[in-house]
Length: 311
Image (cartoon, rainbow, N blue to C red; front, top):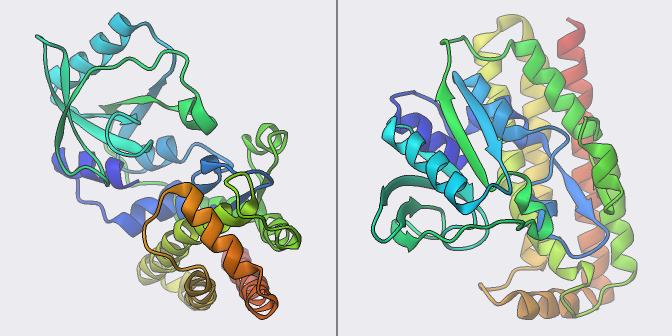
């Protein structure tokens, strides 16, 4: 969503990060993986990139496993039309980045991402790359469409309910890979505390990853609902109550994050540190209490969103 917002601002569109997170549904996602998986931090029941783009008047085209020549042509044609492209894994960590320029000889791309503010990188095609699910959208082309008001408020709220309940077209296939969505994810998260080891394949590193992703998501969920409440007098009371529960959830998740806090480390070191801390009975109990509290606040927020939709 950060990369999408950056492109939107370049194209002259006024959009806030919480609004984009809320409209896309990304603010309401929650996932747990039975095995170590970076995919857990961004998986969602629907395509949040397409949802977010559609909300601000853009269409998306996701491309995967093209030939090197086809990939280069797709990127350069988008840039030649003055629209940056989104990709994954071309700079810094394997996450989305913005491609905003190129050179033909030798083939190089100019990119910016969370981990790399600006960089000139050699063009390295990623044919067949699908590491931990990141291959879903290694390249996303954007195109302007007819201006629109954005998704109807009710549809945005229904999407919040679907995401938090773990309902959506991408859920069944993801569950086959050991992923849990919605309220079910919190229970799977707590169950994973029964066996925490210090290696990378254990749930320990997943716990630290999930906290980082969820803190951002739930903070923006509450802000998004406040924005909608300010726009719709008839929905103000229930949405403000829902927003309050998201605020409480952020507090619970932040407390859990403090239990697993560590300075930036290599994944193996982070997993070992998290496992060592959770080996302590009292800390493990406190951590479990925080996650269960977050689930309860999630459930209460959903009840208020449902009341808003019921009128």
